[in-house]
Length: 142
Image (cartoon, rainbow, N blue to C red):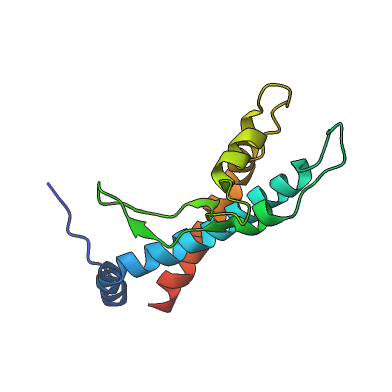
């Protein structure tokens, strides 16, 4: 036999308001998590550029400056997401994504200097924590 459980009226009211603002809350959570991930990727990229080269580095800082996060977008499958990546184009006509790929994976005569994969794994817990805190803050505001 089932027991009836009565929810507090305030809780039910907050829960209904949460439903109306779900997309807004998810957007704030993703932006907060994206900022944490962006900082880790930027730190890693700055650490590997010019390291272990035979010649003096010719880095202009343009690749680091091109790093950023996208606005929150709705994907084809209906999920909201945010991406950390590089804006295009560069002043010299090359692609930032291509240069980042060469740094990440290397090429003939140039060893790989991974910065994206380590940033993803290193920032995972911090991103989840930040997103959870952003969620809790938004729920408290309701």
